[in-house]
Image (tube, rainbow, N blue to C red):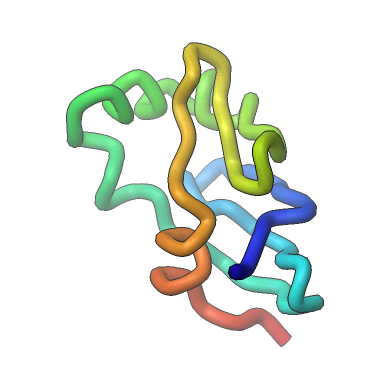
Length: 78
């Protein structure tokens, strides 16, 4: 299973991700920001607090997105 090893949150609500596979990918979080608990991430200051924890991307308040979702719904960066 792919796991996240590094994350950089961007001002446009995208996550630049590195995986244990060596892949460098980009995930667009905007479609998730109007759903349930993720609404708090509409605040860019909160969104930019993203960090790697438990092999995926997490935010304060026990928010996270499954690593397989991040991998499957992201695009490869060159």
